[in-house]
Length: 536
Image (cartoon, rainbow, N blue to C red; front, side, top):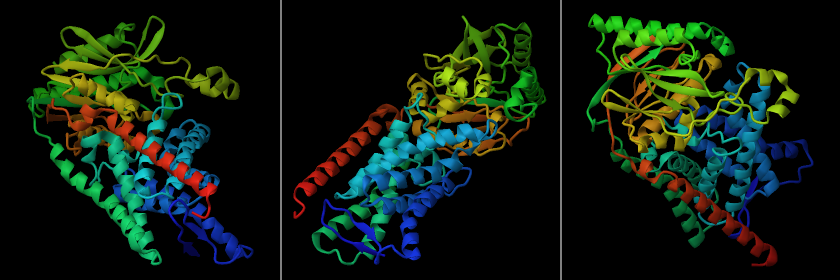
């Protein structure tokens, strides 16, 4: 195969040296498709629970190679294959208990966003400084995927695969959009360097300019990440708090875990009482407050006196406030709620989950879905309603911001708690429905990125594991195993300063979307001029 160099505004094309009439020629035509799918798999391998974050760079380098100079139809197909290679293994946990149908449907829809981004990347690959425009287009694609359909699905943002990487400090600078942009830019810059080394025929000013862009595409993100380390600190600004996380475990794995809802509540109360005994014996420090996970009381304690008695007994045993994850019905509406339960006053504050999960906590297009498969409607018998306000609990001397499970994937949901005064973030979750899949590790990595993004301690109390305590620098200091009853107690720093990412909010993402739009507009205009005047 040979690479043909063309002028600015025209594509570099991978062309077979002979007509693809032979079997070998036909096989060569499959190379880009295979490379697109395999580079998507390589990107998946860069994600937790593995710590191979750096594999994202060669993954995007190969993706840039297969897309460069392609027409829109080929780019769409290659982008879709890349999306499938990445998302099929990444999201396999979504079908653990409900079968492959929902998993495959979700991946098929999400991969369309990647395919459309592929079309844009192929278009901007024809203009100068293409790695910058291409990386911005990827960010724009993630922005769209985080908002639509059905409120969006940001799972698989590139930033969430970088919790162990050198680029992580960039989260404090501009949030997940800037962190992800830097990684993708570095990957495309890597490909451009390799391309220029192999393409000896191009010379002069064009080559020097392209080489400068390629080198800067790799150097600037690395230098910026090193510089951003000054924004990362785990120093206490508002004193410290001793926090306890309780993981009560569940009686069984899978969707049937909540068939014994009272057992789940009893398990968490029992583990809290065991911790209280450890504290009384001097084996553990007395916590200032206790955090229970999402769904730790799926029995509504406001409507069921027996559940209220169990929670109240646990709170009195430990002697400090407990944040309880409950399922509550008010005025005929169902809420996924965190309840602040004081040992003296009982329930005093509540937070209703605002970003509820489609097809898990509510069913879009219920009548249509029911016509396709009535089993799905039976699994979500009644839709959860959305909360409307941030949740920051005053627990002892600390202000604890609540981000319930799925909400941790959404930039706005985490930031709103910090701007509302949270000195510590808690991400109460329930992963029992996903067995021992990678889901819990993917979500834990999100929480590590959020810790750096907003410079806050992040606690992750989970029903069945992995529960963890994460410092503001993203490091995990304690964690539990999976499907065991356990508790974690630790003194953690409280912080109130805001990182640039917290202050800027959505602005870095919107700026990158505008950059993507500018690059795409330039590419389209260049293409129109080329078609009107082919000799230019």
